[in-house]
Image (cartoon, rainbow, N blue to C red):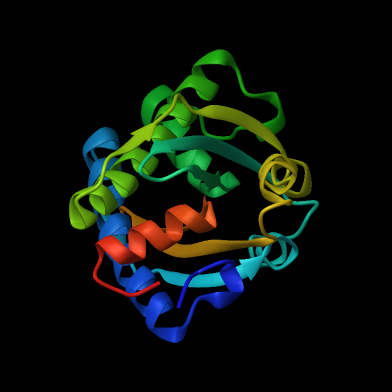
Length: 207
């Protein structure tokens, strides 16, 4: 078959992508642990094929205030990764570096934004680095773009850019424990359909 749209993905395709998600998430968690100097444990991530609205709902709803780090991909894979940082996760990171007990995601200072952007960039880079190594391909990671807003607004950028191609994305739902504190970490992988077909082919799965 020829993969022409996200809806053409089969159960076999999704199983392969879930395994890739597991490996990528493990690498990302290791990178996070090294950066913040804390023990990071990750549960088996759930990888789902969702439309944009369902992804918003599963990440907390359109009015949930969240920090989003958008990383564009080029090379053998064209697309983007949107890494979402919830309030509890952000507070652990900012407290680790700056000793602040409480933060307002809508009133972050320059240092807060820089630090959260770097966390998102490192985790996204580690994630796609694992995919690239596994598939034997080249994936370039551009500089991250940070925004803190309601989730519906954060999701508007990928929705606008990829809405003409597909209304689907790969939703990676992860639960982390950082020094025994449980936090959620959602990532949305949005490659073009052509890129997805290329990736699956490199992984030995007919697409």
